[in-house]
Amino acid sequence: RRRQRAHAHLRRRARGRAVMASLPRRSTSATNALPPQVFRDLLDDPAVVSFLQDRSEQAGMHMSEALADPDVQTRLVASCQQRFPAYVGQVKQHLATLAADPDWRMYTGGLRAFGLEQAPAPLAPVVLIGGVASCACACGDLAMPTQALADSIGFVLAGYQMLFGVIVVLLEAKVSLVQLSRLVDACHTWLLETAGFLSNLALRGLFYIFLGNLWMCFAKYSHFAAWPCGVFLNIVGVLCIFIRLLGFEVRVDKVAARYQAVPMRETVT
Image 1 (cartoon, rainbow, N blue to C red):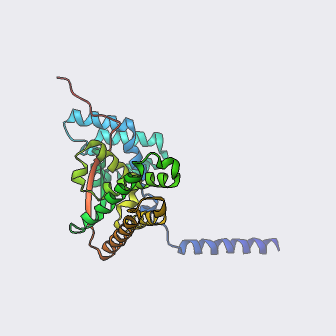
Image 2 (tube, rainbow, N blue to C red):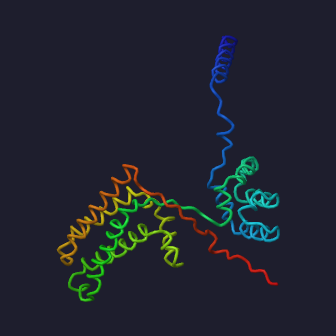
């Protein structure tokens, strides 16, 4: 009986090996894939950024070209061994491909691209007027300090609507105009980075409908222009959604600097 059980156990194991051998194996490309966040964190390392700047200055090349430098690649691998030892092999394997990728080269050069969808030229001013109208209505309530005591709900709402109106104006204004002011440009970049969903015109349309409903719901706490402003923002929101669904949106690409905390060194002659 013991021999019979042993032979049966061996037959089951052999049958199991045959079944496992017949299953498709996972591809090595899938298992060796390098997560983009790992490589992004390596490039954001202050020590790597400083080394990139020093190396680019010594070699007389732009930082976007320094990623293909052997010394820079060695420094990246060393940083990966310290921070992400499990991905050292993947970094070595994909480093040459990543160094030739134009997006990663731009990222290495201290630049970052943002995509923003806006309404086409004939309708863009109409959408921009919606944000300006919201700011104007909010200013009407905030201009009266006594409103904070007599009608605290309306006053707080006006503060929120003022902030939301400024966001609308920033997103709908031309990027070339926004970049005229360093402070405004920094706020615009921060907004695209932290609230990236608003770069989608359809989602921004839902945001405008929300603002319009706020003005309409609290019209009795505000002045007479709150109701028309709310209706106009609802129309603008629906218009943005239809523009996006019909494919008439205009995509605007903005390139912004990343290395704000690491200033470029000045050479003393």
